[in-house]
Image (cartoon, rainbow, N blue to C red):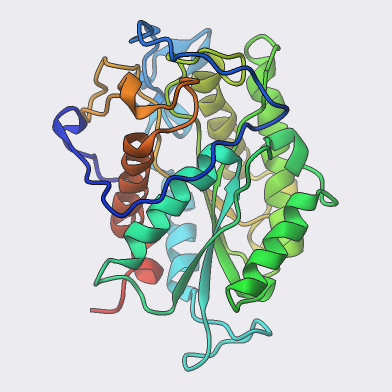
Length: 333
């Protein structure tokens, strides 16, 4: 994954952006002014933690304190990526009438950030013309809610796909960003609960979208400015371990996350980190990323226009540069 340079000096233009309605992940919470004094919580980003530990658990996005995918997982992802091609409405290859659908899965923060990314990505001259980007994320839809195959969340996604002129059979890639609303468990139980929910969500994706191949996951942004109990620190930070441990399960060969049909029934797409979004407030991480109080709305949790643009840019940088996404995200040279 390519480092994103000097975010502390970046300024993002937001002209033409239409603000979305602020939605909470669960029941209505009382909103107050952001806690702008919460500029740091003192945690090391998982990407900077390396082989050091947080409460006894090793850092790094992937096993052994590393931020690079293990070689075998990398090669599998590359092979899958190279095989992605436009599919028609029935899910059969069709260069002429087919589409490659990238779908977002998640809560209010996810839809607010991804809708900004959609606008940005669709304006890129080097974007693959066959790539259709659909925002499936919805306000109020926390991980525990959508880890239910009968949840209304999935019906809404079907409707959004239909409105965009595509079908579930054409979905091949997902970006997942989820969390639990008002968590109360201690670490590591809180992250383990989210890990289980994310596993179920990955399995539901394969059940509902039979041709899905790749799923990229991101955890929360900084929660130190939060003025409500919706998902403050340390839960925002600790959600990164849920993603890390889920992917490690698949890397280690968990049969209920199998993506390789040569090894048995396929239960999930190939999983990988997308962009890692957490940084310790105003304390820059190694690539320069910071989160300012102005990057959030009054509750200190949902992204402001600048926060949405920041995540959207991280997503765009990731999909345009990652070895497993370039082949289908960008048009052929």
